[in-house]
Length: 494
Image 1: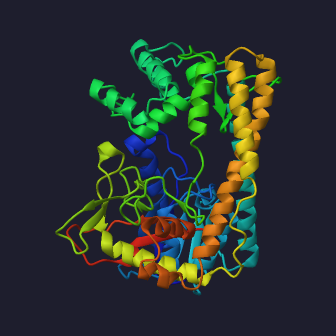
Image 2: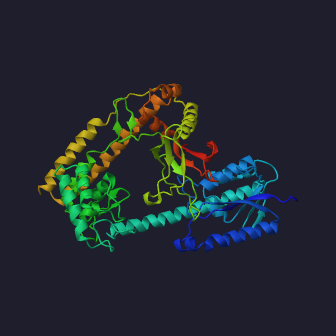
Image 3: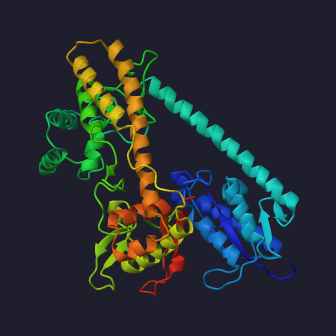
């Protein structure tokens, strides 16, 4: 091309160290390389896209800048109307590490004739089948390398678990910075709470007592019911450890004892585990519907995500929360939490308008794939086996706690029952979800949605059935602006 072509510049980082991100040298150096490349080719930089610290290899990771870039390429212009004719990529292995993303990128770039592309080695013709095939081959090789690294990491974590070595990260509540020695005051609170749970006291009562006494988390925040439950349900309390959701055991099926000091005995923790395990399972109504344990008051709570970039180039990605705002049409606002609450506090949108738009696109998607299969038998066939196993587990646990059976007999037998109970509970949940989909994702879903036949919990379940999340991109420019649905990026489930 002889004309000066506006170019989308993709700066796609996978990982940047805290020091580099703080001083900005990594970003500035790559921007300099990009500017030099554009000048050498006679191209003009229209925009820089940066997905910093967001892995291109993970299917569930949302990369807002990559999605915005593909959208701009497909349309041939930026949101402000500025035309674009190509891309410069800093590191092609950071642009895409999955074949599907690479194909989407190439399809968008070559949507019109005459688009240009360059990477660190220089310009390439992505209209050539050979070049496109080589790029796809590179993505496959990159994915293989990622999988090797993931396997090595998993082996390392497993090895540490089997040797009883504490995991990385912050110290757990109840232990000192070395994660081995007890923090006496915190450990005493945990021990007291553990024995109260075994004695039948509710988490709510324990939580209220902690709040009144000023007991704070290691991040100096108030305890919440969920965080307290997780702390008490953690087998670390008795010196054991879980890996991938399962107790780490030796060849005889007996849990491996860690190097840290325990707070309660194994028998006490097993009693806590029995209390909490008995409460597991979805909140299933008589009609098979799976609902939230506590249904939020607004449709998209926990589904909307803040897409505002941070100073280091990452998006905030915090779940937006809803709050009443009588001054707004509709009366409520979806807003990113403050920095103290884990968000950035910089994104807020009219809740009623977002609900209206997302409802429409979700209903359209559900209508497209309206169920064509007949509703299967509503009853689940595993209820009897599950109840029998849970009763048997309670009896064997009581016998072990009373020293009537040995560790060598109890742990292997209990492990088998735990595995089967887990399978049955998962199957029960899948069955209930199948019932819900077959009953609700039908051709008249719009009529039932709008007529009030579906309650909020059912609407949220259907929304989650269609969407992973909705990224709310920043408006920009300050002040109130008209509602723009283009700034909402749905992330659909397959």
